[in-house]
Image 1 (cartoon, rainbow over the protein chains, first blue to last red):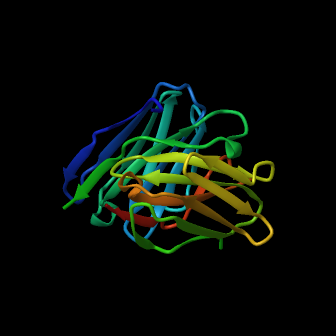
Image 2: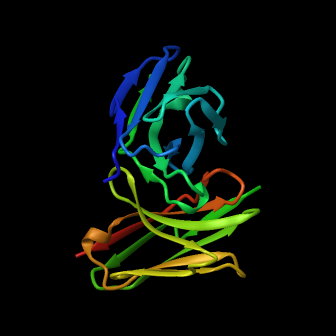
Image 3: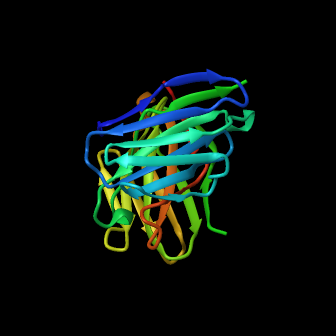
Length: 115
Length: 112
């Protein structure tokens, strides 16, 4: 298995509270990604990173921010959680060179419920 | 707008059957197409197909890419109950730092 750890694995919180999800990798891969998975939508990209302090938005980035201060950690923050952000969140990583030609490998996901 | 469409959305078969899953795409600057298998947790990588590798095979699973007609198929022969999963198709574009665009997936159920 790719060395990817997501934490927490499950979280229940209330609308309006801040939430931070962590993705930790031991592979020293350059590229890291955050996706959400919802019924009827498949996996959708939230944000991604192509190096320390280098991040960019994906297709569903509204309401989310990210940070990457170390190669191994990529944090996803919901500044003020809303019920529409209830989802399963997956982190993925891929190797450095020619990212489009390297498969992404996924963590086990975080199930987030916002009441 | 870029699109990745998988069909069927769900499929129920009996052990020993052969199944074909479809993935069509409309993306600009196509780079590669990937297949993943998702059981209860993380999607796990199956195949990557590119211009230099349009056919892949691993055991009972095989996949081809038709770049002219813009689709891919994933074949599973002699299905087993352990093949029950959601199969995801994703496409990478050449200019987007490895970002993947996913289809909605095909839910395959294999009955004993």
